[in-house]
Image (cartoon, rainbow, N blue to C red; front, side, top):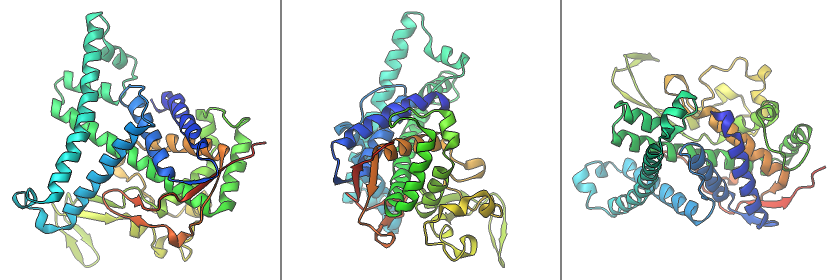
Length: 363
């Protein structure tokens, strides 16, 4: 399925780059471009709708998701808001309710449009869900509706899965890309090494990325891994202890809710050495990471609860960066210590208008 999405990724990222061209020689809020392009890709690949989302519609979804996550985080951090009867009297509750109403309006309307489309096709004796299932090419929305049809999911479960997918796939991809771009803009020597790798792989500036190209982007992969170490998309992972778990001289009792501080683990010199605060992609070379614990670097989590979109994420990030770096030279006035992060439900990089873009000379 991911391989079949590559043409869509290329199309949406090229559109993003064309929009960025209008901002040449300016400092831009590149995160907005990345978010809208990710939204555009997800709506097309996961929902099957080739809508245009790299415009004010994308900006609206961005604002809704960003503000809703802040409302949720605000409630989590203030224990007196945990009791719902009290929470309903707060301004935070009013904002959250309105934001979720707008968000659900988008996802429910998308779902309803798909139901209408499927019904009209059935009237013409075309069973889209059955055909996609038989050919093993169901997208996420088709799969969800198939499970509902088989009475394995309820309508409410379908809605919840669509909501989760939309938030978990768009904001995370955009943040991971933004963190990588900031690091490449600060560390020009690594940006040039990635561009040199692109010159070896691609014949032209606009050549579409194929699966073979992705396999050859080895140094870019190291750069992304190191950026994700500095900016883990999900800074805290929640788990439940399924049995009593001995640790140090104590025990975490069965049934306990545990939060793992990924952000802090990623900056622990015990695991990453004394240069832990430096940007050093070579630390993930096979010869340097051979002794890493399997669960040390977990940008997509790990184990039975790992991210189901990991392959999707890697493909979309590599394609986006390969197009951007072939088209633009990225610079910034920021230094490492100037980058401001907000670790909450999802990590957020707070620096805006931080990236300056210029046209890159290509061969």
